[in-house]
Image (cartoon, rainbow, N blue to C red):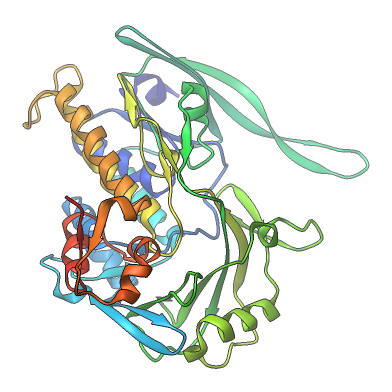
Length: 423
């Protein structure tokens, strides 16, 4: 409790983005508290891959080596239309210390981040949630509820959370990384604009022997979007866009799978067989056993502003991306790395190089918003060379968000197939 009251920065949300924000702040000597309203980490997580830039950031904090040993390197991204291979991107040609994407489970990544945080003397405050915030001239006031479990429900027993105590604080800054249903965003009154229609996806994780275990495959036949991600341990994940949103709505009679704090319906095995036959005929026989599956809806959105004054947003709290390219988490990791430096400079007594804290915070907001927008709205951010394959031109808006890279790495990869940043 005393560490919470003494924190210069409160981080709301203990997913990968919030945890990295806390690690980066603690590394720079900032007093930080990170909290989450759930009581523990989830068994499953949606995010499954680190981009090259994310690995570079983690390496700066001494964390990349252990993760690389436990993950699977993805060196190629191949684009398919039915059985036809139409294009490929070679991540192993990137000018990077980590010329590959790394697939690994989100719970494993979170555990490494929590250990890194603990080594810096910070523990996650589970069962704590932001209850109120007020930002005035030169001051920030926040209220945090400490939650506890209570049993209720005769004749059917149930467990729910109740407020055990409320803590009032005045931290210097609040970093919101509390997901697409961000409580912080709601309390701050910041809208999140829709930038596309809702899209429904079926996600399956299974064991399978892959013919190309270091290759991610993206299926862009017709108007559909699907992807195959190899995972460690002879596992893989298949992601298929569904025809319409109603197919992804929860059926209360089905079993559900938890991803983070949310629960989603399982998907029938026979639908997996149909989707593979329609979109990935090269996959071969579908195993009888699926480790887990979910139907999930994504509403592509982008926040009006990444923040101002003493409240700043990153990750899914700021934007919702479609799933195949794993951009939501990886954009967030890059964002909080920059944000942590800006905050450390802006704090009273901050002495990090790089200009004033206000300048760095403004730069963070402008640069991060521009990168998010060009990934979420690729038709605005990229053009196709006149002599490039027309198949690529027709699929630009679906292809770009599937590439597991950002920034200069993304530009370098896309240039090899004639796709370039718009001027």
